[in-house]
Image (cartoon, rainbow, N blue to C red):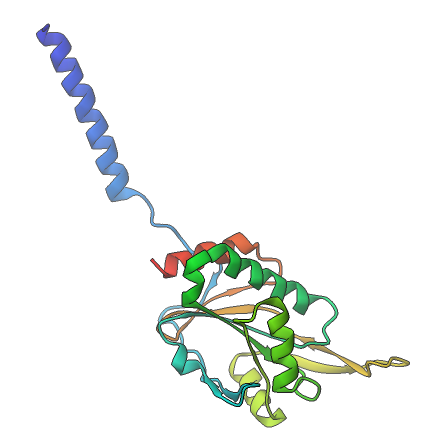
Length: 201
């Protein structure tokens, strides 16, 4: 074999090996697409409410899982059902990884949303979703803890009586119970799925 040809071949292989190694060591790690909380990540405020089944839901019991927390209400005409439908898509796209995710829908309208009413609403999107409500004082403390703005707006000449203006963001709580990421209402489903997969690696 021609020695010159041999050296050219070996040189080419060396260049390829160096390029692969450089890509491995210097490639930027995948980054999250949601809005990240500042480090050190704040511990998520405890949630302790009675579910429709009569059992107590405690956020602290969910450690080891990724929790997607959304505050809304069952009479919401647009944002809430749209967001819940998107959360259903997130869970569907995760496949078997969805076993490591808990979706929680907490009410901003406890006057109308009993634990039974909100759980039935959550079940409509996915039976694994947890719907939560409770006494006004407990819910108010929860809204305050999570920075949820909530305003009751009377409606004139309407059988509904009133509507609720409220903060509409999804909060992602990581497996350690920390508030890690948040998502606005226009966040693509794929972005949320991407971030959960990163956390579950």
